[in-house]
Image 1: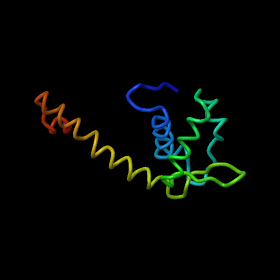
Image 2: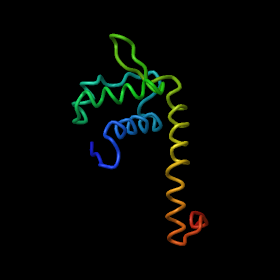
Image 3: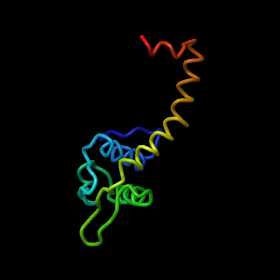
Length: 112
């Protein structure tokens, strides 16, 4: 997995998890890899993966069955959609609008 410096690694990993849920690669009720397994798979410290799992658990996206592992919540897709839409509308759209204004572009270019 390739990481970039603009965002903490654990947040980038959480984003990849959420993309997997939205794309259907991770379905509701499916088991997610163990902390050590996933850390080895993507080449990061298991403590970083644990931080990701704690964040996703706190958001209700995954849950832990003690002694069995972590699983995708039944309503994970809806929760991810809500949070991703909010982030897009509040962070990315304003940045796109500013850039379009600077470049003198009108939203009508998307209709071409």
